[in-house]
Length: 274
Ligand code: KIV
Image (cartoon, rainbow, N blue to C red; front, side, top):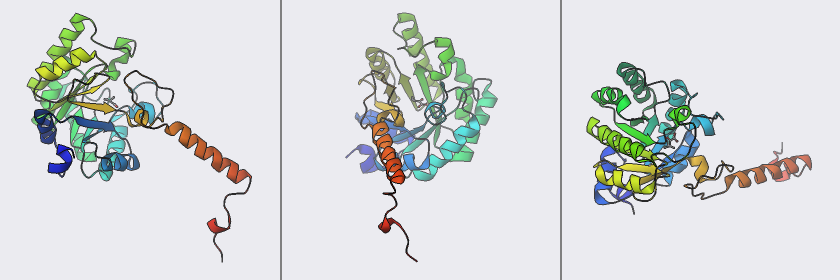
């Protein structure tokens, strides 16, 4: 049984630090609604991310940029109502924290007050450090996010692996140190070479949670819809699919359609008598 299940009723930022210190890997998965979050929590995931990937998988946008703070609050509130154990981290959406530190604090306070979530996540390094420090002054835990940061996709131009070149790897390491020094409780590293991710994890005291960052980090995060195979056309190298729900669900619904057409459904047992 995992350390978190054995010793902690609720997972906290402190428990995640203990997991890193004791060498237990951290499991993290996204969720965006009540029903999904109930299953993720019941399965024993340590940390639930209400990711701005909701913009893609829930709303059908091409990028994470369009999702609003109000929409993130809607998703996070539903997740909070479902969860008993996991630590709930909520993404601050694009445009809600990059302007100035007062604006960043205001957005983080709305998340904490209106959703009941436990922490916020922001994308970027030294360029947003003032905002991070200001959020932390209010006692709000902050998770950083470096490497491929989807809110900057129009700057990168592609979703390919980041920090393969030395200059970018150096900048990433400086950013990671700055996030830890500012007081972040953990960072996500997305789509970077496994060797670099391992180096960052060993360099930092705080947990480093990877997605497409290899096994040498302190935990892993995936998007719910990818893990269960609902996004069946998405095949990044880092993804391990545990189910193929796209086929299961379309198959089941196809059968329902056929049963309605043939009047096989509903049958006598599925109908009320007077
Ligand atoms: O929004 C999200 O789902 C994320 C994960 C990919 C880390 O940020």
